[in-house]
Image (cartoon, rainbow, N blue to C red; front, side, top):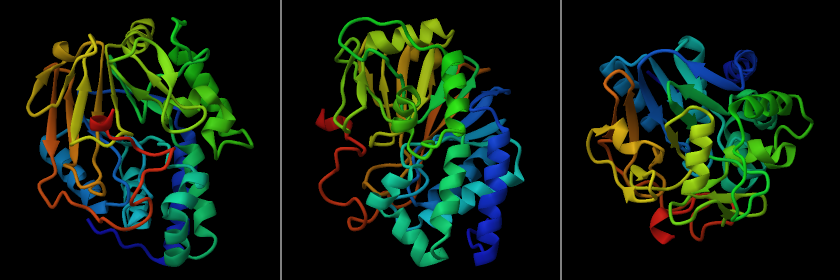
Length: 327
């Protein structure tokens, strides 16, 4: 499956994809038992291609990309066009919105410049229209698939009622038509936090996060209550740089997923999967099997060391992926 697309075809692709995405609910409810979940790919279409091959080999019912298709890596245009084309050609490929599906982020981390150089001055605006049409979460059985995680309203170290999935869906649908929809944290703080917040099993509720104003760390009590309130048992998300995978367990403990794990072992936990090569760590995808009640990491077999240069290289910005090992 190639990733080349002609100039005129690129704009048609963006327009068609935006229309199709807008027809989907902002919070998807998926059918089936076997899912391949792909984390941030950040401008590496070879990883997206590999993930789709894995999906075919494993015979999954659906593929869910958790967002962050552009920025950082050198081929954001090609990666975005690849996943959009596959989305349009298949009714079982789903594309969620990440925090880098945001024009402000793209201006800082490379995609805006790349889009101008490769496709001309109007491409970036057309791509931004695609962003606001993307769903913000998906439900697969008892599992929430989302870019980042649990939102808050009071956002303090004290207990607070969890936000319901119904409220999230209502807010997300409303945000799609907001004049601030390009910038989720400004358009709706709850939806923005779905794309920005990070889990920490070392705290109970919420603390201000390291990514900048309006972002938070959510603790083990916060994610457990969110899951229980919404009839769920697990969160699978991307957003943070990890060595392929990482799990916060329901009791706040941690583990790296190196082999097949029973979903019961991860009950009321949060699993992170990261699929980009940019940061020089392993890239992975997750095979979620609800029938067998198992989760299996599959690691990218190629070179795991992406570019050391490029947009966002060097010291991390305030609103950027954090490395779990540094916290």
